[in-house]
Image 1 (cartoon, rainbow, N blue to C red):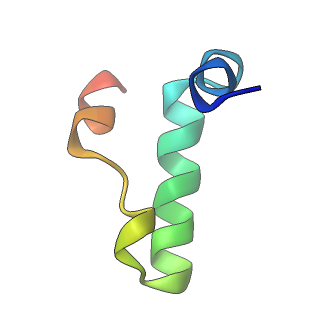
Image 2: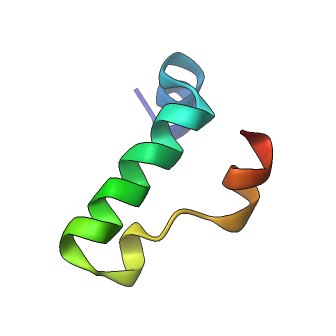
Length: 41
């Protein structure tokens, strides 16, 4: 399962909140959710 298929199953909103949580936990730029993902929510 690739990232886009996983995105279809989980949803953009779940992915955004998970990435936001990971960024707040680890403070690494790679976990910053894309700005466009927030516009989809």
